[in-house]
Image (cartoon, rainbow, N blue to C red; front, side):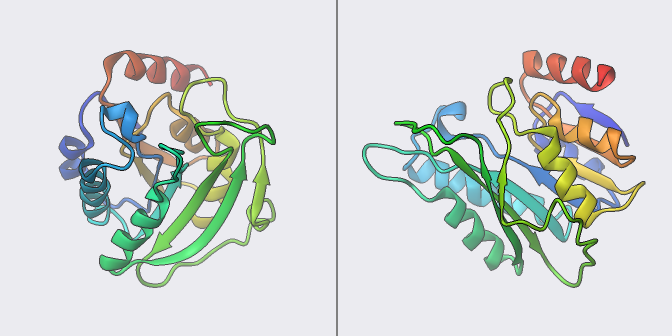
Length: 204
């Protein structure tokens, strides 16, 4: 509890119990050396979904679809399909608008999708309710805002609940949970990012 491991999330998962929610943003294809429209990245998403469905019945996936060779591979749609196969329903779908400026390679909005299996109570937190959220991206690469995580956890979790992030990155999830009285556990594979994450969580 309140631990971030410098390891593959697959090694962390067997250590977990009583996880209320999974919140994460899986890496883009290019971050792990794959092509966006490749079958290998599709298999990566399928494997990732299969793993996290064993951790909790409440899952939030934050995902941006990228442009690739004139088309947009719908990785968010694939994620939805794979979660549906595992018996999860889409409970909520928000759009985070990061910028109103155009970008030739990456969409300027991100899907914030919450899935559940079974019944779940929501707090109907006022800041969570709008379907479109406008907030600037963090200056840290490939990180969502702490405020985004706070909206999700205030709506779906309570103080003292445990939340897991299998791709912790620079620690936005852990910072939000720490500040809102929730507990966190996470995995970050890359040592340099892990060190940055630990320093940030300890200081914010």
